[in-house]
Image 1 (cartoon, rainbow, N blue to C red):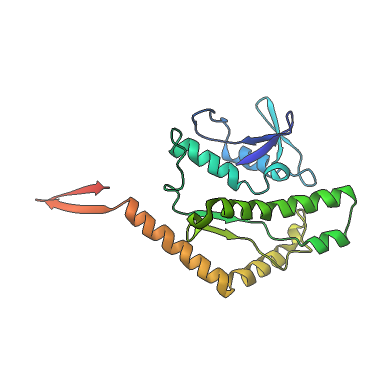
Image 2 (image 1 turned 180 degrees about the vertical axis):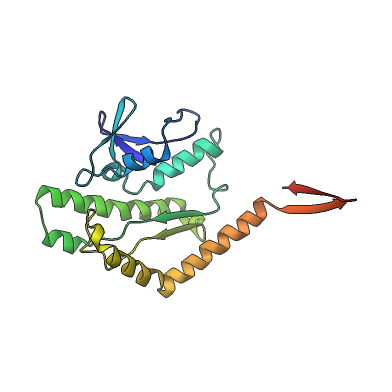
Length: 211
C-alpha cells in the first residue's frame, strides 16, 4: 500500500515485511487502509506511531511502477531481472471520471489538479505497457470502468448503485470478458506450473511433493 507522509509530502510504501533496503512499518492492515484512503476531501490524516499519513492518490494514483520496484526488491534484488518472474499482474482502476465532466464543474486550480491526477493514472498504465513491450501480452490486465462514473465523487457513497451498475455493464462487455478469461487461464496455468503436486503411495503412506 502507498500513502503520503504529511511531514515530507512524499510517498511512503506501507509494508508488513522487510525488503533489502527497508524495514516493516509495523502497522496493522486497518491502519494501512486508513492511511492509504485518507483523501483530504473525505478523511482526516491518520497518525501511526510518530508519523502522520495522508492519501497517496496525488503522488501515486496508479502505483504500478512502485509495485514493479517492490517486486524486484523481494524476488530479484541482486539481478533486477523481473520480467521472467512476473506471470500475472492485475491493475484495478477506480473508474474514469471524464475530463469534460470535470471541466464543466471547474473549480479553478483544484479542478486542473484533479484532471492532471486522473490523466496521469492512465498515462502511467500506458507507459508501463510500452516499457515492457510484448512482455505484457497475456500477463498484464488492467480493468478500469470507462463510462458511467462521471457524476460520482469520492464522498458520494449513496451512489453505490450507480457504481455497481456501471461496473457490471463494463465487465459484461465482450472485451472485458475475454480479458477476464485470459487472466483466469493465466493464473491457473502458472499456478499449475509453479506448484505441481504429486501423490506417491508407499504402502499406506502418502507423500506430498512440490516442484
